[in-house]
Amino acid sequence: MINDIINNDFYSLLKKGSEKIRENDYVRILAHYDGDGVSSAIILTNALKREGIKFHLSYVSSLDEKGFRQLYEEEKDVFTIMVDAGSDQAQFISDYNNYVILDHHFHRDFKAPGININARDFGYNGTTEACGATMAFLMALTMNEDNKDLLPFFVSGVMADKQDIGGFKGLNASIYNEYNKNKTFHMINIDGSNIHEAITYSTDPFFYNLTGYPDNVNEMLSSLNIDPEKHVYDLDNAEMLRLGKALSLRLLSQNIGIDGIKYLETDVIMFDEIKMSSKLLSDIIDGNSRIGANSIPVQYFLGDKSVENEMNSNRRIFKTKLIDYIYRSKNNIKENDYLRYFYAPESEMAGPITGTMALYLFDVKKPIIGFNAGTENIKVSSRGTRHLVSRGLNLSVVMREASQRVGGSGGGHDIAAGAVIPLDTEKKFIDYCSEIIKSQLGSI
Image 1 (tube, rainbow, N blue to C red):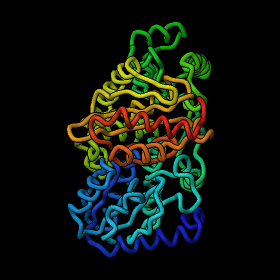
Image 2 (image 1 turned 120 degrees about the vertical axis):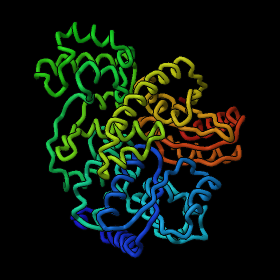
Image 3 (image 1 turned 90 degrees about the vertical axis):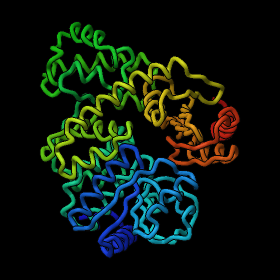
Image 4 (image 1 turned 30 degrees about the vertical axis):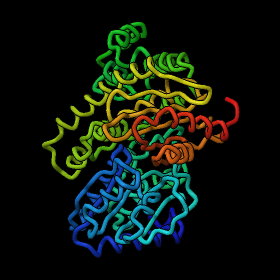
């Protein structure tokens, strides 16, 4: 039961939020646009549907004051659930109180007039122990324990936020241990229709000169005497050992940190009820969200199977783009004494490119910043490593303070954060980021 894994204060606030939700026959959901936010949206829309509550789902892509307030006020008189965002943005809508927030990001000390439920306020690390889908799943369970069957989407959210590296921790682990009744396999962290496809399209982990290079994958598999048409789950122990050793050596040759190495193997959960593995589910949800098809997996998991082909095709489209953009961005990256930075080839792609390069393609010594240049402003994504965070890096502070100095706004996690800044301010922004990172880490 949910009240067995969280304390009374946490549960009481969730209960208060669930009762407020039930007072309405129509609510609005504002979910962050990424894989964690979309996973959260799947949980909440299903929970509301089962209660007979109608809903309207929108996605938050702008976390600055103007963009967030404008989105909220599109239906300002409708009770709103904000998930995977909102705790820090509540200050932008201080004249409203008809909402409940389910968040896990750093936020400033602000007494929200609505109901603000943030995992960090109850002692959980929102970077490693609780994500947006964690909070959405807890709310769904508070509404009805029968919603425990929505566990797959809690898992996909945890994976989208990279909180499964090294195993589930904190609140995530408590939920997983209490509610997971599915078969779990410890194996190489790849998935696809066959082993050749699984490696060719693998971006997490990213194998340099194998990912995106089908001929190189064939050559490697041939040298290992492994049938490329085999499914990864059908490899025998000897084949799995040979493949795991080869892929480990590939990652080590990329001079990456321990986080990237750890992600080579994982616990893959087989969700029989949706006929997908946790790896495939996370890839599908994240891939659709990254190309602007956020609601396709929501639609599918609400019961509309007519979008299945489109949903799977979107995953492949995203993977193909991401692989191409990662190689291009790596070749064009710039750096100074304290950070690396690049310009993403396409809107909304800086985040996944930054995350992949930070984990798999560069050493752990410097954080990476990616720019998405739009017509009105520039969106910024940043990513560090647990090694840098342990030394004092906090990218939430870096993004917030540096963006404010150039007339923008930002925030997020210590290991990953974002910002929005005015056009043509990138040079000053990089200088300010470097200054703040130097103050946090000293010499690199």
